[in-house]
Length: 171
Image (tube, rainbow, N blue to C red; front, side, top):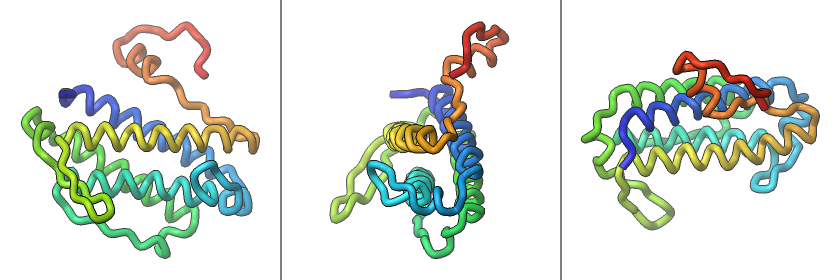
């Protein structure tokens, strides 16, 4: 089982990476944002919205709250960006309040007609890995459009947080 410190570090890194993606996506034209396909979705917009909706849904499930999403209310980049900031804040609040006992608590996760149960730490870990997968897709697409993602590796954040200096190029 992962402990609360590990979950907090992963949540902070996840939120940082999503912020970088949103900042880079803000540089795209409307046509690039809405019409450039990804390997898994019809457009960057739909992929980015999917990434954030899944995070919001799993965060709500981990809190024990219902989740609903109206895609019509999150059509523009500005609306998606606000939703991303809200999702990051919700995740940060959830993680900040977690105890070791909370991490072991079972969370119900509906998948289609099935309702599966997982420890909360596994749901959060899945959330972070799901987002990382889609950020990888976005990294490739955005780089091809001339907008590479300047995401620093987690080890760089650990190095700087511990008061050490990272002496290598940040790529």
